[in-house]
Image 1 (spheres, helix red, strand yellow):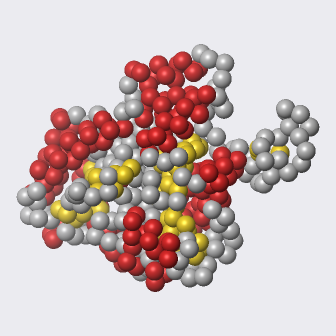
Image 2: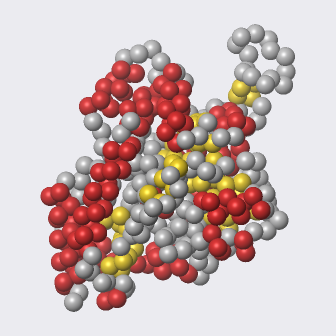
Image 3: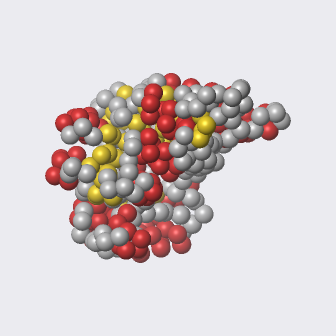
Length: 378
């Protein structure tokens, strides 16, 4: 079965992990510090904090921004549920705004959803394509809001010549195996704000600190738990893998771009397939996903298309179920119809295999299967 996404692990990645396993420090060691420094340098920010996954990175950042019960965040429904789930953990209410033509939140619709309870705008860089962050930052400044960019899919993307996430108040990445780089599981927060960085780091290790003490220190061993935190730490083994993988981000994205070009050329003559938005002078996607949408004669054929590809040994996937479609959110009172364009996108979309090591032979198999299905539907 050809998967829709897959990690790329090379010999030097393996050796980096083995070296740590043979050392005396498996966690809270120098590899954590090095990975954070390297990531901040790549991302174009002053600080980076690595955590156990993208979800915990979101949670820690919502906490650091002071999100609390009764507050609201504004986000998109076309995302993995973690973007809004992490706000729920802080007692806040997610407010969903519909998408634009590129699949990202439509910044022009955000202002109408801002209330006196709104604290954070949380755009998502869907498919690895950065949202309209400049416009969103202007809105946030106008209403004194914070912007937490969910860039979990967008490491290696650029907008206006700057790395994805670097223009927001804070942004998060994911290092899940299907993302640009992997640490097995893992995530990170990037920011230029020293206080946000401090709070994220402290929250991710139980709320403990040895600096800025509220009580008098009783010795070098002394530490304080100043608030209720979590254990969201990333191990040195994972960070060693991350250090090695981070050196390859641009190569991995370039390999994805080559595959995207082949898909685009193969499907250019298919009027019933809507291809993903192309890169522009201003926006360069990390191409986490290659999402096609069905149109014309293929409308309402998504289930058949999905099943056909799986029968051919191709594990196509759907990204994403609108968050408020999930039963848990229905129980909270959210109803279908909130974001018609996001719902229409979901009903027609399908993600085709895309990862750096996807071979020409396997990609040709995917292309031929797609074209065969289209011919059957004529």
